[in-house]
Length: 221
Image (cartoon, rainbow, N blue to C red):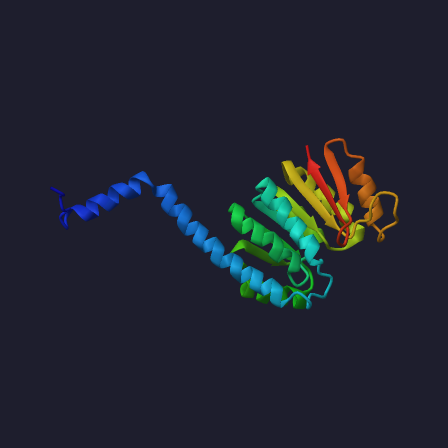
């Protein structure tokens, strides 16, 4: 004869089920949250596809930054040069999946404000700490540590940014920089000198991806 569970038994039953399978329940909730956020970010990027100006990166570079973060499980991101937030959104989207957060720095107030609106519309505000500041000063002051850095500010200061960040970048971390031409090609003033500098470092492995706007990718050994 089949036994019927009494009403008083059900709360106890579900309590033990939660104890046995807590991670599965949490995973299901996280998966649902990520799916909802993914849909929101994808819709936002699609709606803005042909409207990014003000020194923003092309979508292909945004996708590359996204992939680097996910592949390595980075969680502590820094972006030097927010503009109106295209690259920030790709970076923060990836960090939302790794449990991380992005600090991004912009000196222009109008671009900073527009970026804040974009972050909110994309649903990523909680994953971004956007600072209105002079990166020459703030980058020196930030305590770190960082495991992922994207530099897309004043090119003549790239080497200085790198030197300021290097002690704060963890082993296995990645420093990326935009508008870099491959070795042997003359790039924007300051970027050639930067590339020569990082290529000469024994404790870094550097490559250049030229599929978009030119991205140097330096991994710290």
